Length: 158
Image (tube, rainbow, N blue to C red; front, side, top):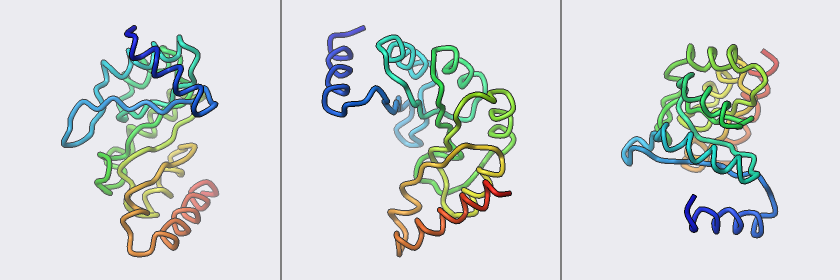
């Protein structure tokens, strides 16, 4: 537990006024894939410091279970690498996470490129999706955001 980590934790609480913190520990600079080992350790330390940690992770069940064991109640698995827009590369893995971690909030946090991807994620039982590139890089961000809103609702209803 370094001085920097403690200082950052205090700063986060004071500046943001929240105990929630999104955690990203990048392991590969090209794909932005998380480092599962360092992610679990960082999550453990932050949970012990009193934070509600929302870790960005892959869809790997073992890593996700380790994050839950570390005290995370929300997981943010990817559908595909950040910014790729590839959609749900492994729907089976996401469905497995939902089945094996029924009490955990699951938010798909990367790789969605089309509203249909969000609909499919919701149909698999995800609790929410987090978007950036699909909306911010579209020709009409407002219209794209509205399309995703409708797709999420359709997936929940489905």
